[in-house]
Image (cartoon, rainbow, N blue to C red; front, side):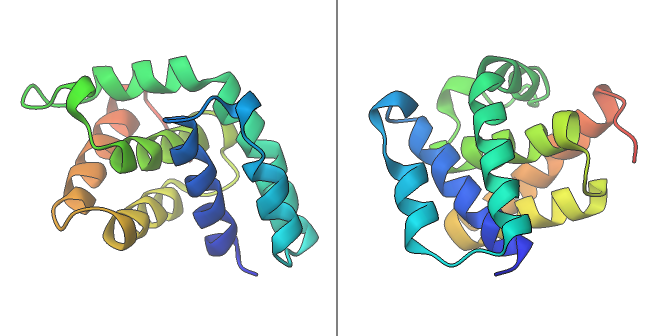
Length: 137
């Protein structure tokens, strides 16, 4: 299984946390037990999921302050929010992948799961985050 698939699963877990408190969920164990993951990708999920949960409020704050004036944080599609949380976490806290890879993967998730216009919205928000938070490779 590729890193892309591992990131896809991490997105699903992140999306779920927007509706269900993680302590009330068995999704992580169910997902990890139901698929065959290479150790590196298994570790990617196991390391990043708890950190996304731990930094959820900070990730939401970063995303909120980097939205354009036309958008309200409260009105974001939950799918887009989950994608932005995952990508922002990777940009701010993980830093194992290049900025280009993180943004490209976020755009691909948006194309797969969200609306026709979401990928460009996500690309723009991530560009603001990279610029305003002074993120470099």
